[in-house]
Amino acid sequence: MPIQKNCTVVEAVRLNAFAYSFTLEAEGMTPEGPDQFVHVKCGHSRLLRRPISICDWEENLLRIVFEVRGEGTEWLSRRKAGDRLDVLGPLGRGFRMDREGRYLLVGGGIGVPPMLGCAKWTAERSTAVLGFRSADRAMLSKDFQKSCKEIFLCSDDGSIGRHGFVDAQVRDILEKDKDFTAVLACGPKPMLKNVAAVAAEFGVPCQVSMEERMACGVGACLGCAIQMADGTMQHVCKDGPVFDAGEVDWNV
Image 1 (cartoon, rainbow, N blue to C red):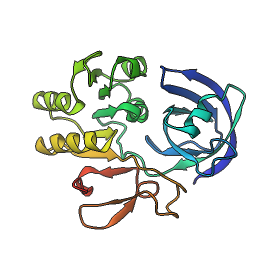
Image 2 (image 1 turned 90 degrees about the vertical axis):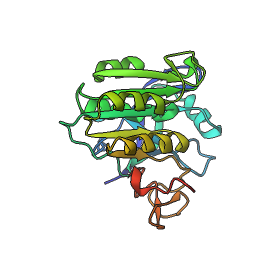
Image 3 (image 1 turned 30 degrees about the vertical axis):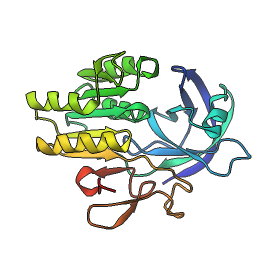
Image 4 (image 1 turned 180 degrees about the horizontal axis):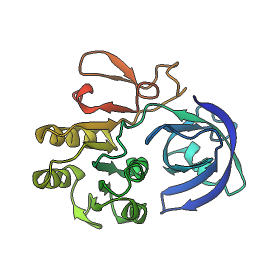
């Protein structure tokens, strides 16, 4: 059940020129599983909260990772240890995972952080494919190395890891080994569409975490609606952010 409270920033770390990692004191906000999110109020003058996936957690602590994308996240990036944030959460439906499962985890850009919770959930049995625009945007690779059996890095410009998009790496992995419980992916919609297509080609179940602008975070405002393959509309904040890939209408 989501709660709203003022959470103290325990640690604030800059990961690169664009991304920040905050650890929050968040008693009572322990998520049910990977890739639920919190809604953070970013300054008194800004009406809408910012949705941020939960990257990691332990007892009474949540870790969130975000990139500066506008005024709200720029304000948030200036917070320091000891500051307090108005936080609502945990929210949404995350990845459905078996702790004994073996997953292929795929993250692109700011879709990388929530996959770390998935990696820790399966205790070094899963493989991660992490994609970034360039080396200066890479983050959390050491955390994934500690929590995964194997990791692969990709970049759009070839400045780190494999030159190219993550779906090509996913294809190479599945051609050699299809014995994964599922492919789990988070990132921009074009990336998710391509990863879902590769997973379907090899007959591996796929779940995707969708990114949409959110206002209320609880399904009341209807602002984050997406169209499904059966013609119905679902709301990313309440019905997602995670959906089975086959449920999503990728042609909209």
